[in-house]
Image (cartoon, rainbow, N blue to C red; front, side, top):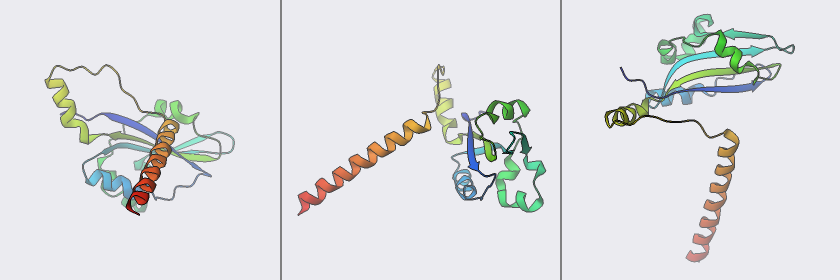
Length: 154
């Protein structure tokens, strides 16, 4: 069985509150075959820096039901070492969701690369701040292009 690329994502929330607003998009991406959530941990950090971790097996039946089919996919492969590795990124009196996501959309590409004798040499993600800067630049360029098209149409 070929796995797609695996990515971990740490999403922080001030004040130890999860609203569930992200869940519909996670489910939509899963249902479209774009990703599979391999594991999901909720990490709570109190005002003194102490952490508590909730795994899917710690959730009430109501909480697990809200996860829907994602709950059935979870393999629970993240461990205490993984929590310790990311805990420093979480400010005191806040929480985070640590997701391990398989990029299922890329399985065919990965197999094609392997079948062609290709060897992955490096990979990574662009830093969120860099992506935000790029988004702002693209938005500005699109606005300028739109203004030019409006002027040309007048």
